[in-house]
Length: 257
Image 1 (tube, one colour):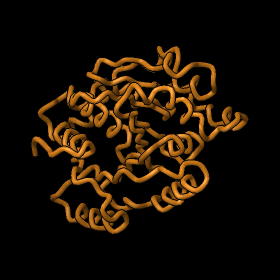
Image 2 (image 1 turned 30 degrees about the vertical axis):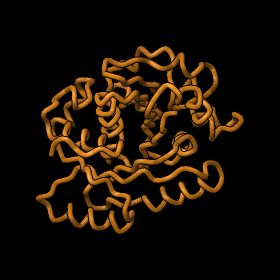
Image 3 (image 1 turned 135 degrees about the vertical axis):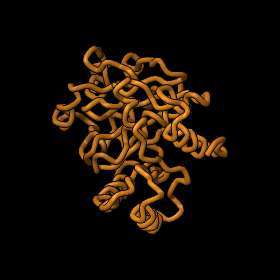
Image 4 (image 1 turned 135 degrees about the horizontal axis):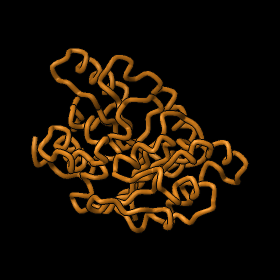
């Protein structure tokens, strides 16, 4: 049965979508069967895997409101062992529509129950908010992966996120745990970076991934080509970083530094 990991942080611009797309692809390249579940109305993870969100007939929106069966909305991608449950602009109104639905907080969990047997990993790309869509991800997930950028105010808002997680554990999903914290936009040359790393490790003791994601022009360029970094530039530092993260997630030693 596949492991469901929500990539979550209500702060925008921390590398959630970049991480979801590239970690999914790195695991797929390692032979793991992966599903990316895009619940961000912006649909950047969808386009990041080369899927034209303007041409999607069935998406996660139809699945959440109950007008489509989950397997029918899943699409194959051009990338090894990676499928996607895509998002599009229709999802923008889903939170309002879902308020009137029964068990509105667990509709994604029910949808993924029909899919998880087919995959090793299911990654949920969350929107930058703590609304009903993110609540659905927290209720569906086995674990949470929290990207944090190595910049000033890195921990801003995280106390609110962790308070929400504690409430979800108490009310809806007692088994959800923190998979780990991922440091993004890492630059070892900056004193600020080490200060942020020390602060994050105090806030999340023993939960910070050894792998970190560097600042990288190639990582920034890849989404505009609809490609994960390991397909856009396999020799880049960004590709090596996500490969290391994928291996760490699987309990394997990194192949390259």
